[in-house]
Length: 141
Image 1 (tube, rainbow, N blue to C red):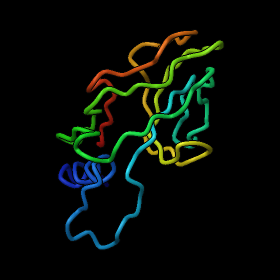
Image 2 (image 1 turned 90 degrees about the vertical axis):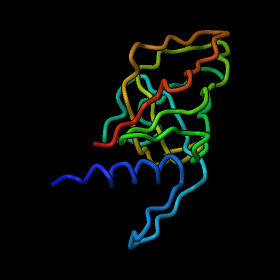
Image 3 (image 1 turned 120 degrees about the vertical axis):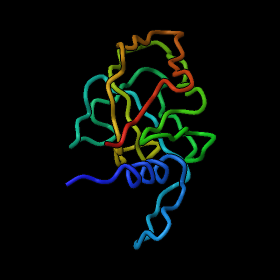
Image 4 (image 1 turned 45 degrees about the vertical axis):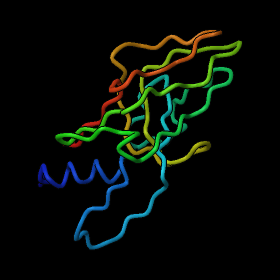
């Protein structure tokens, strides 16, 4: 059994833009932002926001608003509508290979989506990891 394309797109709009699904029987709660994280390996479907999360000096997750200003949603896909800039790396770095979309700014948190980066992102002292507009895409299928 699969969801219809209409419902998939409605779900992506709910998660990334906070748009309610009309006539949806049960109200869903959630914050006004999603937290983007970087990971050194696949956090996998059973993981949480801390699973394989990178730990470079000064690293922190980045909040992105659950609005049309934070996410573009079209045809069951959500992509970042603005650049996502992580804190500049201090003394120690790492290599990110995955990104995550979760609910908490710190701690375990619920990992909603994760995906592999198109290329590993090597982060060293003085580097400010960032993703250009549209560089992070989540597809609901």
